[in-house]
Image 1 (tube, rainbow, N blue to C red):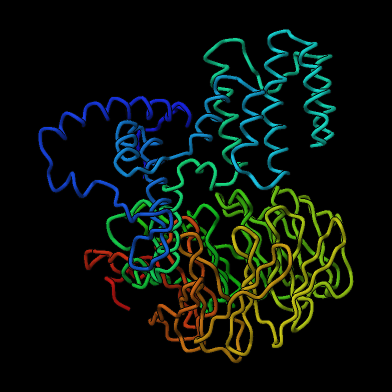
Image 2: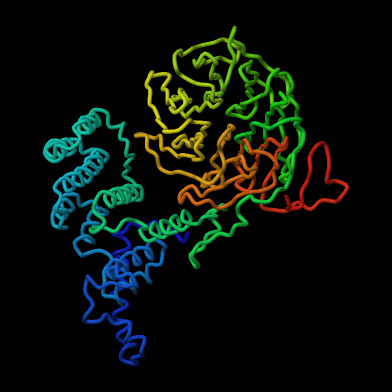
Length: 580
């Protein structure tokens, strides 16, 4: 989609175009006298062609519009002569003569003429005319100041800009530049080249302001192609690779091999049911917790293999929740209704144990600055702590329940908890604002998207709901198919641009849906017990991990690992050769 960029402004292109047209008309007249081929006849515009003629099988693409945006694309890519040829051969001009005149007047700094021409372009909206005039006259004002014509600039401000009654605050700001000219924010220089550059920027601003029917937006064809690729990508159920692999030559369609569906490793270090796991933000580590009261930090090697880094003992009860610090240097772990611990990832040392007399913790999470910690408490309150263990704030009341999930938005301003069996609370802890998501079934768990715009809610009725929580809260999708009736199962976003939804299931499988279409695209078999939790590597869309009641963690990928027979079992890690 790249090409040779043309830094010249549209009017500059038009000047070249018109000049080229003159030369071309003279040159082609000699060729036409010499011969007349079939291609020449086909190239002539038909008498029946009109502005409403359409092309394509759908009958929705107007030929005139198509030719104009192709011409604009040619000019913007630097193919000026080819663009001029297209205009001449098709008889369809990129811009009207009035628009060409207007654009040239802007580049020549003929401000009064350009404002007069603006009224002749055919704009129906008086507000747009006034706003465009304001922008043009503002440029005139600054250039007069730069030329030390202060009285002329003042006259322009008083008699031309102010009467438009557009943006009075800006008018007052402009008046200050007369007193303090050095504040000129447009940095307009008397240097000819710099001034032309400034006028080109003005022209670009006007192109965005004026309707596209009057002046075609810059690189419109490229934008349409990008839109088409985006739609193809979004419609592709298995798209899980970089956009750079898409081609304009064929319709985009990925194969199933882009989804991590092969068991590459089986991690067997835990001695009991594995309840929770989560990749670090940088994708270099995986942390897991179990009903064996043990937390394990795993390291993801450069070749994609996962190896044991630290065992973290200390919890007296099963560990139900883990949260990585924003910089992935520390880890929070939360036992079932007991203490919360903070660990150093590099050394495996326990840095601090957070306790609250007579109470236990059920969830934990980090503020985006990494300096504060939030926790859900068994008395249904939420606490905020500093790293030294001091409780900074406590919000009492029905703030949370026994569900061990705590979401914190990227800006750190909202805490998300399950406050009742069927209700999720979005709590603005600074503003004390509250928003609620009401579900019709018991909530089991939830997951927050990476951009904090969406919330994935797992329900006991074998449904997963996707909510848009940016602005007005809205249910946007439902995912079904997995088995869920008794246990706590956790789902996640994942894949390239988080285009997929994954979830554990009580039938020992991992379920993967395409996020936009809601279609179930994969079920992954291999575990022999309920799959409690899944985590997709945030930096590697081809790596997925699942935790199960069968005491194991499975690492799913797209490439088979080829190992010697003697190396297939090591330190509680079983390497697979693509099977289950």
